[in-house]
Structures are given as C-alpha cells and as structure tokens.
Amino acid sequence: MAGMAAMKTNGFFLTEGMMALCILGILTAIMLPQMTWNKNRHEVDVLTREIAIDLQRMRQYSLTSGMAQGNSWTLSLQKNEYVIMERYIVHKRRAYPDGVVVPLGGTRKDIKFDGKGRPQNNMQITVAEREGTYQHRIIVAVQTGRIRIE
Image (cartoon, rainbow, N blue to C red; front, side, top):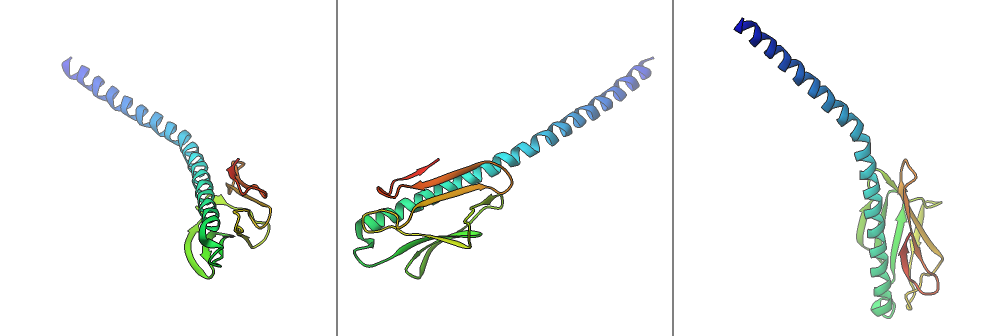
C-alpha cells in the first residue's frame, strides 16, 4: 500500500512540473515581442537625445569661437549614420541602431549654424522605428536656434 502511494505522488509531481514549464514557455512567448518593441522605442529615444545634444554643442561652438576662427562645423545625416566634422576632420561617427531609421528624402542632409547660433536652413529631423509608428522629431527654430524634441 505504501508503494502505491509513493508511485502516485511521484507521477503527480512529474505532471505538475511539466505543466509549470509549459505555462512558463507560453508566458515567455507572449512577452518576447513586447520586449523587442520596447527596445526599439528606447533606441529611438536615445538616438534622438544624442543628436539633439550634438546639435546643441555645435550651436554653442558657433556662438563662442567656432565661426570667429573660420572653422565650419557640420552635422551630416546620412543613410546609416551621422557624422560630425570640422572642415574635413571627422570628430564623431555614430551608426544608427538596427531598428532605427532617419528618413532624409535624399542621400544626405547637412546641418550648420551661423555665428549667431541660428541654423543656415529650416531644420527638422525625424528619428523613427524601422517598422512601426513610434518616432520623435528634432526641430531647430530658424530665428532663435532653439532645439527641441517633439
């Protein structure tokens, strides 16, 4: 009699363990797409802030000493990366993450500031998910040079 009770308990424990693993596998499969979606959103947020900070640094440089010395700083947005250059010297090169795209409407978009910290042309940069609707825009006001993220 004691042997029968032990067999029933052992079999029940094995079934219980298998069911717990199945439930855990199902929950993992459900949560995995949400984790990658949040990762892409995070990469869009980080790249947007990084570009805005680099634009602010370029603007500050042009306000202080950049244009007085005749140096021309350029932020060049390209298909897969953006580059910050002083004349022809590359100071920073940053590739876009895999899930992020910066639509340009062409092959390249260059951004420069004048000696008063204003952009030389009307400027709006969009950073978006490659497959999705999540996006941010960086807007630089033409008259004041104020940089904001929407």
